[in-house]
Amino acid sequence: MASIHIVAKGETLAAIARQKMGSSRAAATLADYNALRTRRLAVGSRIFIPSAADLRPPRVVAEAPAMAPRRVSARAGAVAPPPAPPAGLHGVLGAFGDIYDFIRNDGTIDPRWESRHITRVTLPFAIPLDWDTAKSVTGIRCHTRLAPLFTDVFQRIVAAGLKSTVKTYGGCYQFRAKRNGSKPSTHSWGIAIDFNVKTNAMGTAGDMDPRLVELMEGMGFVWGGRWSGRGRDPMHFQYCSAY
Ligand SMILES: [Zn+2]
Image (cartoon, rainbow, N blue to C red; front, side, top):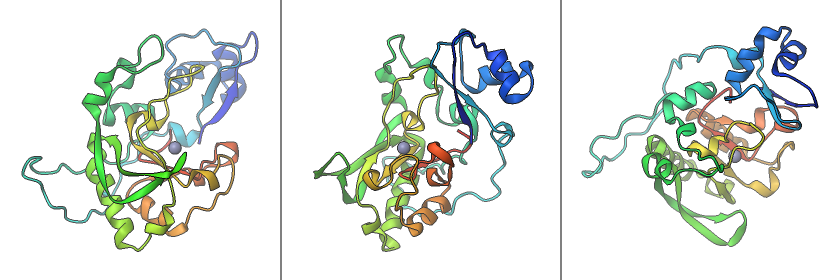
């Protein structure tokens, strides 16, 4: 899990690399890891400092997440299996698309990003919206390549009798403008999903049901509740690691 460094006045990437990673030569690694397109750092911006584990090449997943046989719709033809969960920014860009090509200068996302990569999945049960529990969602928007996986996730939640552990829906695809040079959230690719937001605030232990966590992890998701410190994010599940 990467740590976060806030850029102080006069700090350079080389200085941060020397201080945090032991060598100014790691500046190139930092630039790459943070997808910086310029070496000029804004005071107060956030730089992610990768841990050694974050920089290891993507691990080959020995076993693909177990998938139940699915009915294949005539319209869609054979359903492609989901990609293995990628590692790091480059893995995510490779598996789910180079979002940088679609982020406009004003920080908004080109609508072609959504038409190309985002699709709607119908849920087998309605889930109250976290920010307005009087309303429920009956579908979510996610990355097209993960649509069969998300469909499977919710079917398994029902089959395992865990419907009641999903109390509210906090979002899946949601483009968040890049701020302060930080990397886009995994929600920007529609490969992350938040549940039970109110009782699982960032930095807290939260109250996510361990059976739900086990089910999600069994399908290849990384649970933010395993992260440490203020980056701990127990509401959050994402289909990639080291990001
Ligand atoms: Zn999230």
